Length: 246
Image (tube, rainbow, N blue to C red; front, side):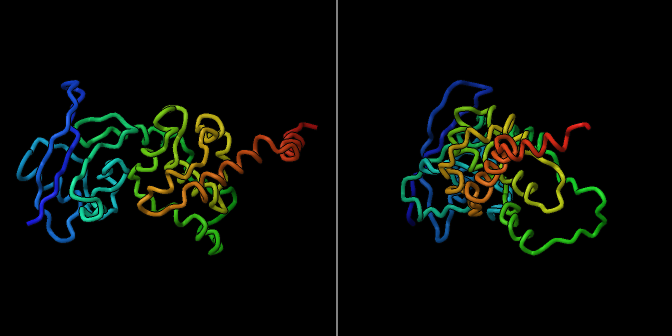
């Protein structure tokens, strides 16, 4: 049976500063994915290996890792697509807990800061929408929160606390594009959200396993909305007139 060489980064920062790679020879069957190889290692070679996974069907986003230097889902990456020598690292944008498991809880703290969907006053259920409005934000709702877009974003890696990141731009865009949502989130993104840090390199879009056009359909429209909100002179004048007390 054919074998592949799997190199896995090993570390447990809470216990030791040691960081090293362990190498394993794993037999490969037809249709085998990288997560299958990791499970084989756990079951037959090293039961101390830590890895996060859940559905094994590219639906939960739990098994994110860097495979041969590229952020991917282990359950969606076939071994025959990456070669006979495979190096697996944890995603680098977040602190390592152990081996391939990282602490992504920062994302849940950001999610708490984003105002939820709030319908306009005076509307009665059921809400009626045009199909074009449903279609416009439908792709954003396919996000599986794998955080691969966050991982590959150089802004997140270099300015971790100053930018919400592409995953959260997707969430905000889905809310802002809802035709009956009443919340203006422009000020949040322009300030604490740090969307101005994004230089639209599209690296996040290129690694999304759901093929969400993060940059084109979420980040750029949000940037345009913020420009209208904060810098458009006519818009600013209208707001001043509306808020003026006669």
